[in-house]
Picture 1 (spheres, rainbow over the protein chains, first blue to last red):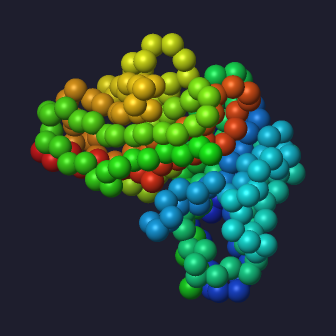
Picture 2: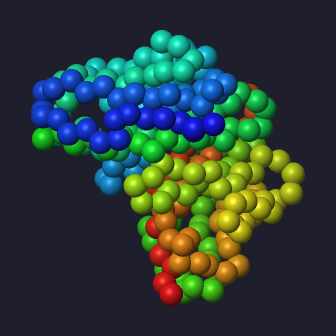
Length: 115
Length: 115
């Protein structure tokens, strides 16, 4: 398996622009997680899905952020409008549903820079 | 509420010496505990986990961790450090039972192994 795939790997945009990050989870995994990593705040869970349904979005910082999972093999995280403080590395992770597993498999991340 | 503490921002060891990266947790009920490693410009990789059973858990790359319920700790250890072990290490926890849910990650500890 190719693992979790994220695109783009790097994104540079200007303040006010819309940014869309993409994720393809590992085939057969029922859970998908979006994280944000910064030096100041560390690793933060933004939202996670189970069987394409959002379960917990309490980590989404504000209404400018939205996430969707239209099918089992694709998810997007959108920021509109983007701001410089959104600059971070955004990770997608997936995990299977099975008792006593919980291992999350992380993608390589998208490094977002908002100028 | 669930929480994880990694009291050291950075751990420095000489190659060949034993290493310990500390982690303490707080969770109601039985904990599921994890260690992940992050190499520069990469996503997190799973190292090992404790779900139940033997308190000493062995994982990838020669790492092991010991679950200590009375001290609510899950320290990561390796008998002989390698320069290639230098990376950022994250401890994570979730409450046991039920299906896969979100993990709570610590702030991370940078391990620096010097030749």
